[in-house]
Length: 256
DNA sequence: ATGGTCGAGTATCGA
Image (tube, rainbow, N blue to C red; front, side, top):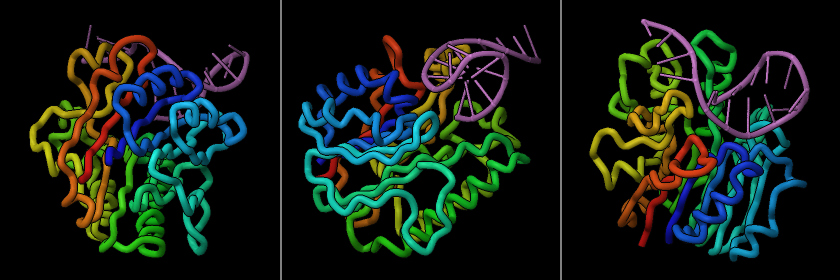
């Protein structure tokens, strides 16, 4: 089973590239973020034509998350579960696919350390942890996939010095990510790859992609019973090249 | 040393 995640940065702008990628990468499950679509404009038929069932949670213009699946898509939940303060944005959708509880997450960017969105980001992480506490069991297969807008370690950004006193690398953000790992999630990509300079996001500006100036902020976090089944993991840099790419590359893991 | 691009929508904001 191949589980993938991709921040597509507008599914309207990206649909041809997503269709192309589904055709050759053949994921069983694809989590998408930043669809920037309402549920009414989500291209359900385009994906069903390729053999995928889908679930989308979006309000249009900003954010928006989706799950595509060839292995079933059951018990869909939009956003945080009951009992947790509702999110102002559409950043989380969860479903059970092929026996795995899958979430597609788009963690708030944070903007800057003194911006209210930074506190929103930290609060969002804590609510995600509470959501997992309430809805999932770390002794079962769970995958939380998406754009976390946090580089877990300094080696996950191209130049750590440039990221001091900015979002994506601050201790509070990394602590929030660690609390998800404390619950029972592991970085499935790192289970396979220990090398540096492996990124998932490159700014459109300044030729950052070609200069290898990237960040590893898209993650597949998996519980122990799932991460033990991972046989292969890849960031598909090919999808960041060519015509009208997203600024993120897709990431996937294969599980036995 | 700084900024360099996209995509939202159609002036700027967000990333």
